[in-house]
Length: 348
Image (tube, rainbow, N blue to C red; front, side, top):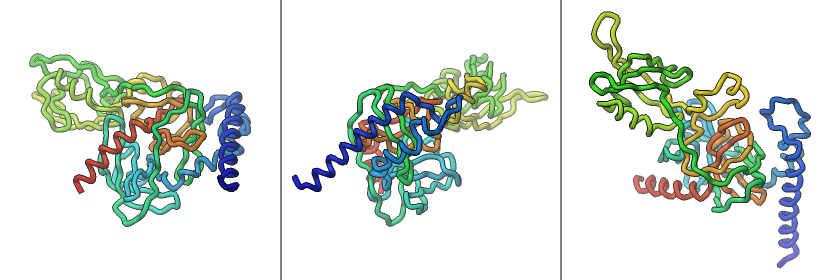
């Protein structure tokens, strides 16, 4: 082996050892940016010195991370997965048009949704422009619990440093409209109670309303309404057709748009919400996630997550709590991506 190659290998190994050692030392005085107690910035895991140390690892994927803008505002990060214009991002954040992509160097391009996988909240975006992108290479690898993880942003700057807390597990979805239904005389879905702080409450659904259609599809019974709603994930919007008793006589037909919300968020107090900080609307319902304690903003999901060797082990998919973030492991992402690309290219 040439001397230069040996030196490069030694340098990389030394960097990984230094990162792991210093991160371990920093973990004993960890105070995250959402902590309720003040702390010296130098004591934080993501202090300036630590960020500079891990920057070479984060920079290794800087050309493969982009920012997604929807409805004129930043809503997520995206991971470039193909040189011919395809990126993966968090689907539930794409709430408005137009969609635009900001690359590492600041260039902006319009994009469109090419395919979605609702079950794991993934969207495949396509930039329709003659540009060459640098795709990211994922690895079907998971470090052991307590390993340090790095979340890079659009320019390669780390947006968070965390610790892997739980190996892959399924997260059942807890999406709820926020109504208690009973059968009316004809067996149809009659609203008996509306949960405060729910999507139904915000939309104006009231006790005594009869739900007769969802997203334009006629519902003939309470059971059919409940079955349809069970298939809706947190963060998704539904169009409800309601029959409401009129002020004089008869029933009035009303159309309402309501958002499915996570049950845990509906139940939390104002103080709980303040402590947990801003989170994604969709923070449950994934086939398999790894859990880490990186403090991410909701619009920092959709980008890759790395181990201290620079391996891409997954894609951040949700900020779920004060120090709880979820990432889809690379093994799941690669399977979903392969089917989405096949579906999209077949249609071209």
